[in-house]
Length: 552
Image 1 (cartoon, rainbow, N blue to C red):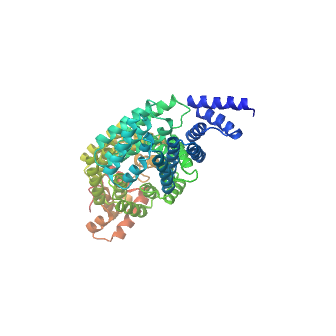
Image 2 (cartoon, one colour):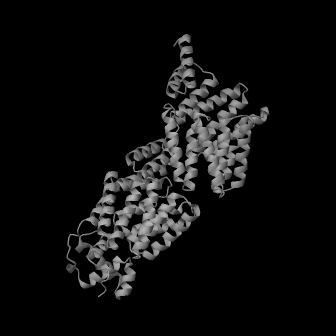
């Protein structure tokens, strides 16, 4: 390539960079880089373009090269900034020792030159992050604040945003969520108005969504995701989403019933996070994939995904316990969810486990155990006040009241849950609530309302592609294979009546003065005779045939 051609390609690359056409910038600058030694400014541009195109390993090498080039020319500030970029990439990959080495090198360069500059603020960020990860909220908040103040003094929007983001996350963990999310909102305004550099968009978005997750602020997460998506559509050559960002997007898509899109996002996240050196967050992506397979009735694929999640250190619960329940392995489901809930002390992580434990306890006939877990979930939901938790709690409370034969109060709670799920645009969860509402209406004698609710749940499950849930609703809607209650023995009718009141096998054994093993055998025979597969369906049969009062 001639000198003239090289100069033209170099200028085209610089122009593409200024126009934020990252693909063109990368192609042109890479071509020139292969032909001749480019200036450190252009190496830094190439590193930025590579990073935004997802070429992580290449971008790290280029920033390291730019660091050395700037340092050799005596430009300590630019060298320090490039060193920070390398350290930031290493921190994301979980390589703390390497990141610390690059930060120390950058700090030494700045100390040697004695410059007072914005780069000193960037070097405060890893220390602040370490404080935060160690649970030292106040020192972390102070360090992030110092970084932000330096950013303001040198008018560096990126540094200001990073500092305020860190402060907001600290405030959330320190029990001041209102102040914390205020700072997160301020940062996201800077993101969506183009005030921060493209390099930070993905990281800032992920941090905001993670902060929302900590306080179950689903509405805010949805709002900023929608806003950022709209903004990205007007900037198609920007690549703000990284692996963990994609996981958050997949979770929201799943909630909204866009399961195909959610699977695509989760798979992209997994692929991104497995790029060498792989990041442990790949476990979270694998778990999300497992959840989607489970909902779609693809149990073998779900189990494989949960196993992969566990290999990466991600607890596969409550998804794996729900899978075992769907497979009919009730003892395994109960043991798994009880173990996971018992080990999890952080209140922020307990609600999904408590919700699953309530469902599993009810499915195994342990109404008193379900009451305890639902009550704890209600206390957490009340303390945090997040709509998502209030919806989960109302549904759990309604299901327990229904099992306790208090259909009237149970129906009121379930109506509350349904309104909350609709507000959150969560069709799968709403369908589950409508199924319970249908059972409550049936117990109250309103068969027309019961049919309408069950039909609505069935249509939603069919639309979403949830075959197992749809089959369960069809089972509740269809007449039992054997309609004549006389085919049950007297003892089986007694056991069925007690099952329908929500009693456990142990409670039934005590009331009828028989062994728990005998009760289990009777329950198995009842399900076989009625042609149903669950206690819920047998309960529906009992109410349909007015057997609930049968005791003799």
